[in-house]
Length: 183
Image 1 (cartoon, rainbow, N blue to C red):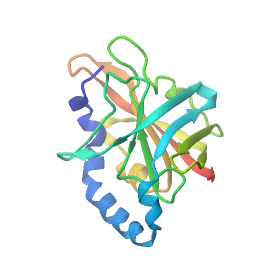
Image 2 (spheres, one colour):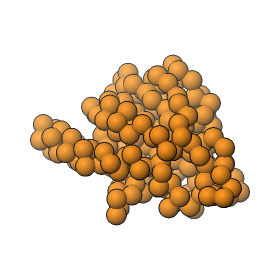
Image 3 (cartoon, rainbow, N blue to C red):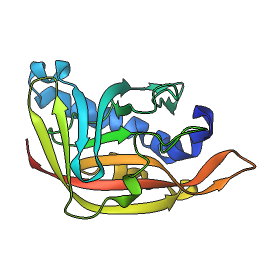
């Protein structure tokens, strides 16, 4: 499995839109009740894949999106600069596909199909329920940043495709797009 620094191409386009996200979030936060700031997603549940995983906060450090630590392969991460699942905006959750020795939290993500359900439990007790619209596998060199970070809905992201042994990283990303159906 590639080291965190090797995920750079996953977020290159995302970094370009990072400033846009901050600006969008600043605009949204003016109209959002103060209680929203303390609400965070706690857990993701994907019944069709048998995934039930805790969520941790991920940020942007030195222009790079943080990733869940490899020492916690069963933990996914919510990009705290994105929307809280269940709220308007793009909610982004990242997870590793594998480690050097074992499958990780989003190993089965490529098996998602349109119509399947994703649930995200929040710290306020609400459960945001999403319906999968589509899944795509894209080259890390052509990451669809605007579609991922600026359009409403839940985005689940992991590595995929073939493994580049010279660079020690996967060549593609698997991205699941889902629409909120119940909050």
